[in-house]
Image 1 (cartoon, helix red, strand yellow):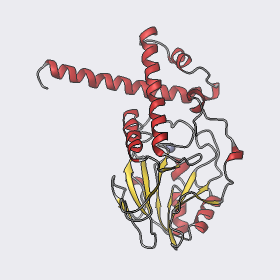
Image 2: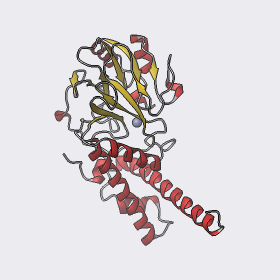
Image 3: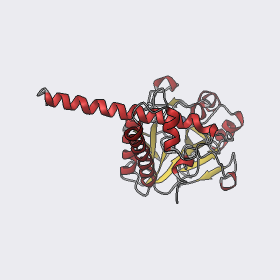
Image 4: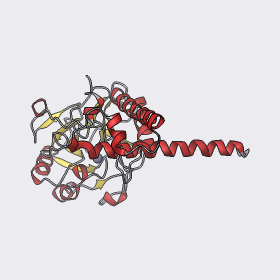
Length: 302
Ligand SMILES: [Zn+2]
């Protein structure tokens, strides 16, 4: 299991459609978690969005995580495969995960729950640490807030029964860890500091647990992916510090990107720039924090 080299990953634009299962099929990944791949391939969604159906094989009801975009065909497949859908959950607000939720609610009658209350319908918002149980569905779902990609990003820990007394089968990570490519941090409400903290939680709790990502193939060890993502971010931060040290803080975005990415497809330059902006914002915030601490020490506040 390996991720492609860092430069090309962000950039993981080269899709290998052959290695991915067909669209609109229900594919079991763990005993309680099956995936239906939505036919919405693209740069940020790779082969498409993974919609997860959670239920034990004997259950007549199900929970659907991330119905995906408003794609009537896909929603109909989910509705049929989920039998009686009792609850719709969202990992975060992005359109390729959440836009189909309202229509799917119309089709199924199921309430919608998300971390951001404005996305909820007929039910309250998700709470960090909460355990979700519904009648007729054996697996239980632990909600773990994992902000960073967006402020409202959560991960769902899929337990075969009661949490900590049954098997942790997998973790639905949304876009916090999404298959083989680097996750973009939203420039509007994303935060690299929070993202690194969220990855640390997933690294700690995800040892040998199956990765059930929002895009791309599943993996067999959430920890491994989390560590790779952390390392790659740290490496980028180190590179930016290095360029600042040699070329000064006034270095242009173009020169900075040329220095840290050895090979950027012009189409993906915008993504590289966004990612670099987010990294710089993080570095500057860290420095402010540092100097705040130092001046507090100087003035005897600490
Ligand atoms: Zn997203």
